[in-house]
Image 1 (cartoon, rainbow, N blue to C red):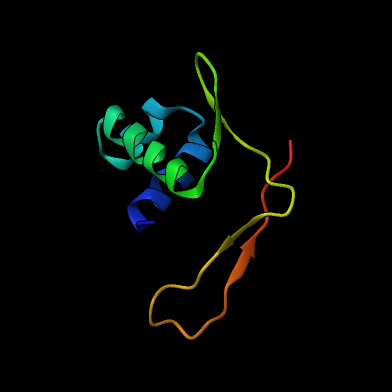
Image 2 (tube, rainbow, N blue to C red):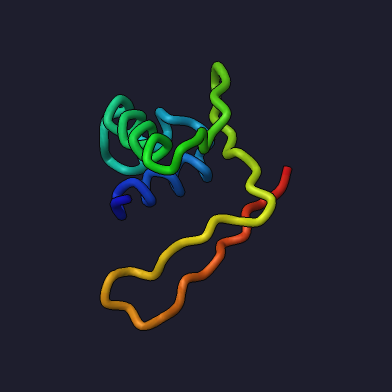
Length: 84
């Protein structure tokens, strides 16, 4: 998992649109889409429900557990996901 993929993931969560998220990140929409697809493949499941005009993050009831960056002394932490 790369930091770039995390940045794209967060932008897509907030923008709810591949086009707007790509514009916000300064990349083409196909580049952002491919990065999200690779992230989903690495994690083994869909992260978004794709609709005609938007993308909704899948609801993870227990949050998403993120490992600390390499070299960091802080422990892993769980980021709660918004419900709804």
